Length: 124
Image (cartoon, rainbow, N blue to C red; front, side, top):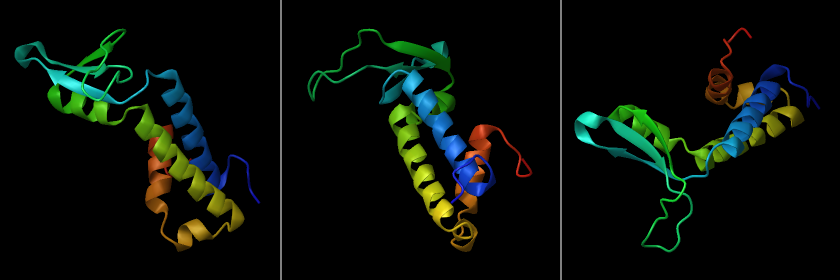
């Protein structure tokens, strides 16, 4: 069983690890975007819901962006990153049990996601 950092399973594990590290370092989600016309858009982290009707704005963080960027960034909050990391780890585990499985079941897209997240080229 290959639990190292090489091969497709290793690529998936490295990406999952980095996603989790970045998610844990970020403000908790969910996030949302708020656009103010010509003033641009912000990505807001409102912290935890006090109840189902009101959101606490204490300690919020903002990132300036245009509308499309703000919407995209808000959608990739830490809870989403952890869910994707969990998926990549499950695929890596399956690939470690059966090294040829990932290519046989068509997990090329998951490996491409991992490589893109890591900033690696397909030859890396």
